[in-house]
Image 1 (spheres, rainbow, N blue to C red):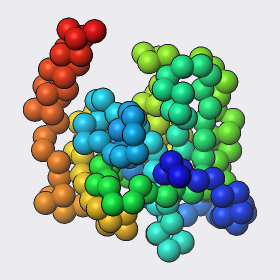
Image 2 (tube, rainbow, N blue to C red):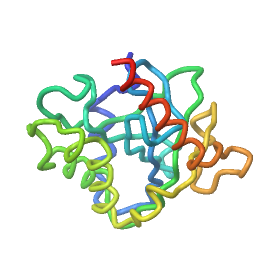
Image 3 (spheres, rainbow, N blue to C red):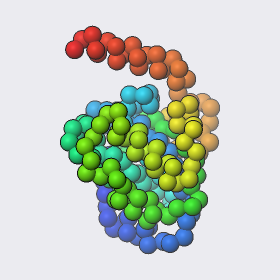
Image 4 (cartoon, rainbow, N blue to C red):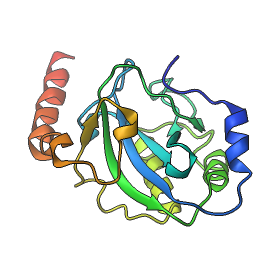
Length: 189
């Protein structure tokens, strides 16, 4: 299992609710290759994670499908999210959406203009997609580049206000390490 599983029965049960409810919204940072998560949001795959506190803390996601590693046409996916077992989860709280239903979010994903377009690392990628989702949900996008990254080993510990002890080291040093890493790869290639 790849961490994603789209069980249409579970989606259909939740999507028949017509009233907006509190949906906790997070960015989930996945490693570009392999089945794990990554602490640096600059060099990872971004997934929009949705937590439903009123539904036993069920998790859903929407994502610009990265199974083709940036080649070919984009496919936007939506469904229940199942975390990789025994992996440290890296995430960033975005906010709480109170004006959309899960059905509306699913409809937004399915009808997104990126579906079927060619992937472009600079103009049509996972970060652009999650940014458009956050805008659709009516949440503030300004924290995305400057927000703190947190970690946990237990999915249910993902909260809008994580403890400071769960914070990953600041992004500025991490960004410097990222640049050094990318520069090293460029020299190697």
